[in-house]
Image (spheres, rainbow, N blue to C red):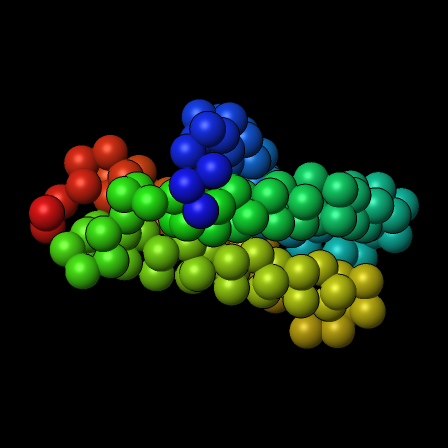
Length: 150
C-alpha cells in the first residue's frame, strides 16, 4: 500500500472533515430528541422534528461516518502510520470509535421509535446520552494528539 503515501495528507484532511461532520450530527441528533420528547403530544411540532432527524441522520451523519471509516482504514494501511504492537493509544482510540459507531446506530434505532411512537424515552434520558459523544471525542482527541502509552 505504498502508493497511499502520496495521498496521506489528502486522506487525512478528508478524514478530519468527515469526523467533524459526524460529530456535529452525534451532538445535534440527541438534542433534537430532547425537544421531540418534550413535545411528543403535539403532532404539529413532531411533524417538524421527524424530517429534521431523518435528514440529519441519512444525509449528514451516515455519509460522514462512512467516509470517516473509509479514510481511517486507508490511513491504517499506509506503512508506518500505526505500529499495532506498540501503539496502545491507537487501540484505545479504535475502541472509542467503535463505541461511537454503536452509539450512532443506537440513535438510528431511537429515531425509529419516534416514528413508530413506541418506546420513546423522556427528555432527561436524551439529555444524558447527549454527553456520550462528547466523552468519546475527548478520549479520541487525547489519544491522537498526546499518544500516551508509547
